[in-house]
Amino acid sequence: MKILVVGNGAREHAIVHALAGEPGGHELHAAPGNPGIGREATLHAVDANDGAAVAALATSLGAELVVVGPEAPLVAGVADAVRAAGIPCFGPSAEAARLEGSKAFAKEVMAAADVPTARAHVCTTLAEVADALDDFGAPHVVKDDGLAAGKGVVVTADRAAALAHAEAALGAAGGAGRVVVEEYLDGPEVSLFCISDGATVVPLVPAQDFKRVGDDDAGPNTGGMGAYSPLDWAPAGLVDEVLERIAQPTVDEMARRGTPFAGVLYVGLALTSRGTRVVEFNARFGDPETQVVLARLATPLSSVLHAAATGGLGDLEPLRWSDDAVVNVVVAAAGYPGTPRKGDPITGIEDAEALDGVHVLHAGTATSGGALVASGGRVLSVVARGADLDAARRLAYDGVARIGLAGSHHRTDIALRAARGEVTVPTAG
Image (cartoon, rainbow, N blue to C red; front, side):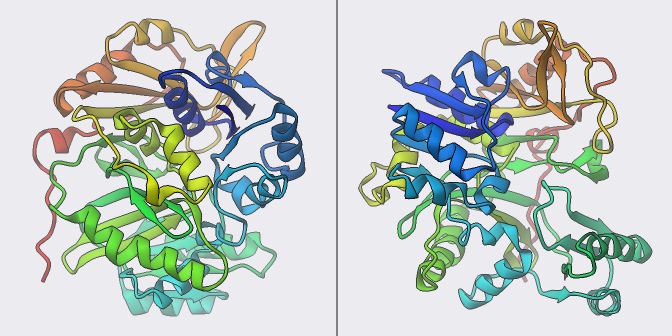
């Protein structure tokens, strides 16, 4: 199959890597891609957010499937442009992608579908934010209404810091912005990707990611510093519960509104003392969780994506999964999540991949003078699979140790508490 993958991050590299490893092979293309993706697909210097340009490229290639990875192109309507050109596309329409593009819209849909989630106030003034913070009490949760690349959320016990974040978010939209203030949800968080063709929903396996920059969840939120799967501590029946109470009702509600959701419904969950609650919806695969989930998928990814893009999920065989544990450790550039330092050379990737069970996915990389250099905040994902989390962790960190990037940093505790059996779910009251 000729497949075009749109995007340039580690999520897109994970998709390309999975497709490249399928029996029989595919003709793979990426726009714009990155140096790592370029080892497994032909790169095209096309703006991922330009729907007309992506559709024209897909047409010229004779693509049989287009996979749109990041959220910004989806919200910009790239999937709509590709479908209008008559090419099957994996990714929701711009209207359906509002589930991620607007936190307020997502809350509206959840309410209509009776989906369990945190209580929330949508605020357009700082006075409304102050009232909402006082209503819910600390810890305070303030979310930018629009896209923020995973970093538009502040969770803090400091009321002044919560107000300052809200003020900045409101001001960034020229005074016409909105923020969502939510009640704090206790308990561990879980990510579950649900594939939909607009009617049928097929869940993947759960993963857990690590959003804070430092060990023990210290420091500011990032786009994600690592992830792992499986979650042996998760309650039995969690996936079925999410499918029945959250994902399918949401997809049904979107269809009822005339804006069917076809693509990935990323369900971010908190397993709280009051039961399972939705933290957020996203309209695409999550990064860094995609790297571990797709590494465990034994069913050919192309068959899943094509079925979703063509309305055929109901005919798909049950998905097959590896029992292996997979751990992803993100290597970040100096300065991340603030202003990352760019241009530092990267070495040791081949040494890391010489370890059995390890592969390295590129995110913020570029070439300069023939050398591979850092070009963004999250630079690499070091992904390792093992018989259990202990084995996968050892391999992942052995791989990280072989990579050279001046000033880089990473968390040392990805999947550590889970490997020790220390993750617990509050008893629902």
